[in-house]
Length: 221
Image 1 (tube, one colour):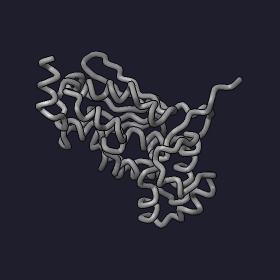
Image 2 (cartoon, one colour; image 1 turned 120 degrees about the vertical axis):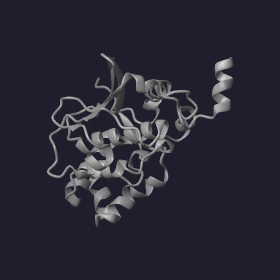
Image 3 (tube, helix red, strand yellow; image 1 turned 180 degrees about the vertical axis):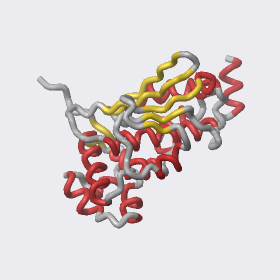
Image 4 (cartoon, rainbow, N blue to C red; image 1 turned 90 degrees about the vertical axis):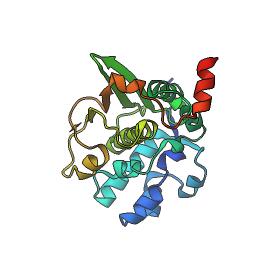
């Protein structure tokens, strides 16, 4: 018996109608071609096959002739997009605790997305992997995931924060301006892994979103 197909929530496609309108993409044609229900976007907690999400994003990039479609979608994702989990993460005292909580509970929102924290020699890599249950193009889903993760980290420690590097396993697009705008410098392609590299010391940064009263109460207990 084969393993069950990993699922994701319709929330994974949040903002796709707005972006499609901006780039002149026929969103009805897009959804019809991927076998998904556009109307179900109003039910963000509804589960669908994660591979269908990946297919839709790849089709969107192809039909719009926009190699950075997934990353453009990520530009508007923030911690709040995690729903109830965001309320837990925002009260963690520091970045390390927040990342560990995200890793522990991310499967509640996307069963195909796996996040790992790997520390070595003063650096920490927050690695993103997509396990869709079959071999299929997923460049757009990877860039959406890494871009969203980057924005969540920036929400927690402040918008002026920048990582040491951002790695992608796939090859570079013909135009990297969107990547540079989102991540800044230090972007590499064809690296073999997907993820964000930061200083290990950054994990000790305080969470700027945490309620000081809640944090001090937790420390005292």
